[in-house]
Image 1: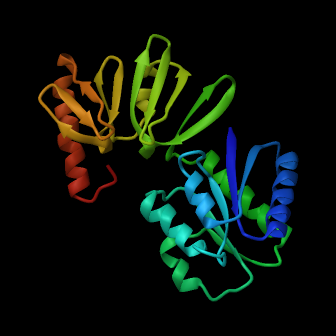
Image 2: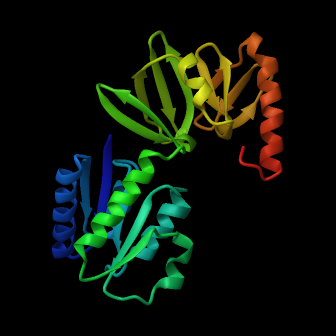
Length: 245
């Protein structure tokens, strides 16, 4: 599994320092870590999430133009991303209230302590490894993960399963629908022999089909209709009642 770690800081020295720490940790741990660096908030916001999805971001607070608080709010409010881990980095400590709504994992004060960086990265990547919020799959002998909330639906084509994602991308791996359906969260429903949809991404439910929020129309198989209708009633009860769904 490749972990995408980002660094967003206008100071070259801080970026280089963090990059070297992360490279050392990658060698010691044996984990496949890809490091992405941005020197401004604007460049980060142009690239994420369209060009790369970040698992963990080291984010400077004080940058020219938009600062780290703006970036954090962009991640949580505009991207609707609650899963990206954010570790703020700053030489000042008077930002506690501004950062509260962004829900950062930690706050590191400059000068940066190597042990603190390594401990944080180790804990977060270990948590992600066992996080049941993610669907994990293997393709070309490489382990991958995707947050369940980002999956619009699964489509089976013979021995391959395609994952249609909310960002417009598609993933693929070798497998069968029957092998994954039992391990999916309650919000997923089998609607045909080759389709499992995420109820969270339905924008319109018709008699014999569902329009997903990416515009795709998924037909509901005749023998799956009753089960699907029951599932929708139970799901709506959970959502309206404030359950976990």
